[in-house]
Image (cartoon, rainbow, N blue to C red):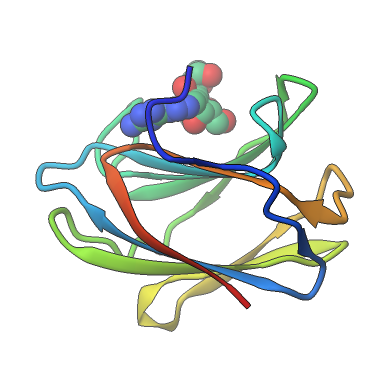
Length: 135
Ligand SMILES: C=CCO[C@@H]1O[C@H](CO)[C@@H](O[C@@H]2O[C@H](CO)[C@H](O)[C@H](OCc3cn(-c4n[nH]c(N)n4)nn3)[C@H]2O)[C@H](O)[C@H]1NC(C)=O
């Protein structure tokens, strides 16, 4: 069951960008942004880990297809600080998502599900969404 904010019917097509502004809690251990079709079909599970599952200050990304996790992709860039406000941009593309982080870091994650439209976004963990921008 999701505890954080859930957005549905977002209708974000390829070429469009989603901006998520939010606050990372003081003492944060981990937070999650999930984007995709629904809870079971996630195009991008974006999971910055401050200190959880034996991971320290690393971003773990994955996909979920019909409830099944894919292979993790780990990013060492970690431009996040507990107790601060942050903005993350995700650009949708039929082949690869581009995730833009603070401090001009960015990386790509494959569109494994081949989703043409992102309808679902939810946040979990030590992060409070303040605004979502669709452009
Ligand atoms: C080394 C042998 C076992 O491997 C570990 O197996 C764990 C369990 O599958 C992996 O953690 C999962 O990794 C998934 C992505 O591949 C998800 O991140 C999964 O968490 C789903 C989740 C977390 N949250 C959440 N809610 N609130 C917070 N803070 N987080 N909501 N959904 C995590 O529990 C974890 O990433 C994985 N570690 C490695 C190194 O592979």
